[in-house]
Length: 242
Image 1 (cartoon, rainbow, N blue to C red):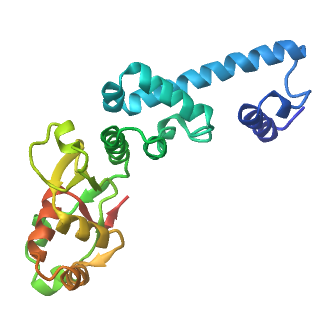
Image 2 (image 1 turned 90 degrees about the horizontal axis):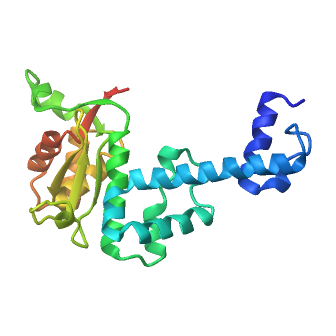
Image 3 (image 1 turned 90 degrees about the vertical axis):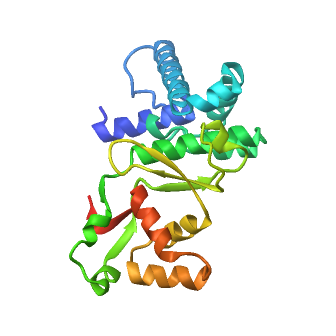
């Protein structure tokens, strides 16, 4: 008899590598019954992965059509992609796989957006930085405040007609995806916001971040960009991270 962890490891190896990886004494019963049971389990897991992809990428599925989406997703899974991931993350590499397969760039863009949206939805909780936090503070204290990008904040290119696909009328090169409260929100933004969000990928004081931004983009409105980021809920204080 195997210890629980050993039995789980052997079972996982069997699912990943096939029946030949299954020890003869892992399951009770005749070999043909064990193989039949493994096939049923594998079919159930395979179906669950396809359903997970459908639920993760509903816009992409609608754009491609059910038949093409199903065909591509089966090829994605049959190639061994996402098999080691939980169902919630089985599709994390699907947009890159689409791109490598030369899928229509507009469809790839929508798939990337859907994954970013899901990442934002499931991101860790953090209190977004609000302008009210500066009340009663002098300029020196504000500039010394340590700030970092909110865990739910993501930014992606709006190329390939993505904004139009999402029903966003504004013409902007980037889309900022943020979840300051319960809802995931989409904001069309410019390159200044992209640059600042990259800076805040690591914790900085506001003063240091503004200085870095101004050195790289001296013609942009640094304070206006910071206020825009605060407005969208894309920043948080370091001590607000859960």
